[in-house]
Length: 349
Image (cartoon, rainbow, N blue to C red; front, side, top):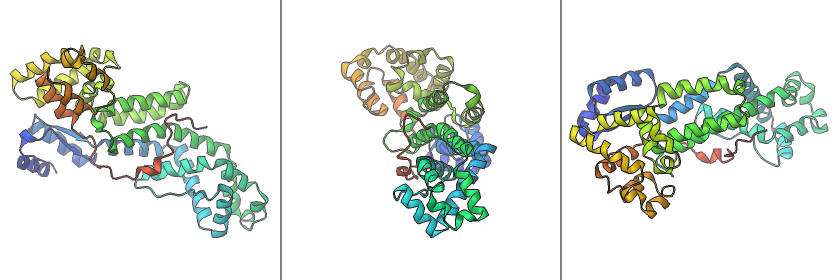
């Protein structure tokens, strides 16, 4: 795999390559690291969408969540394999379905539990109604088992638990795979915001989300937390000027200097880029222009730098180079309409 990637870089020209993105399979990870060793002026980056998929997949393997998902799949399968029961369900749900196709295992799990959560009251009404109790299915053992699942408080509580942490992660994944904004300048902040949302949804009770955070942090630190992501966070005016402490964050500034050294080959130009950083951080020159200030949150970061970065031509070139990068190899493959009901409030109850 390394030879294949290296040959591709050679054909394109190393001077024209800033970043190589692959999925997170061990063979790609090793190839990416070898590529970085051989070619010190480019970055290998794991696909952010795939990393987020793996986060959700890891969480789905937790015993309580795995058991709940298995019960949810059994419930859906039982209903949809019996046309008479399916018609009964549709009467109680107002013709709303419990099933909808999705492209990944995580998406299937998320949508399955989200749809059940939305129809919780209707399903409980159905399985406590005379329509159900008088039916042939209610008298059979497997029907009784399904009915017990629907009336089981722990089943619904675990669904809510799952949705509270998966909702914010799905929103990050939607950003990464989305077409509206180039995601490289937003993923660092999006992950931080997602974790903050999870903390709030559990009222700051660390015991409730500690295990989940361990899984998220492991994937984030090993695979997603990259110097390029931190630098794009720093160079995104929408985020930077709202968070003045960023420039005092030693980790972020260290990543900035690492990227400057790696992506700018000429030592003299490296020094010029660094010298111009203070104009950006202090909003001097064109950065302090009224239009520049007003459009920090309305223009795409690359467009903003193109319009107002002329006071710092070396930093401008560097910023536009990295902010134009993507962080996903999947390229908007998902049908995001299936996630329309993922609210920003994360207020599942």
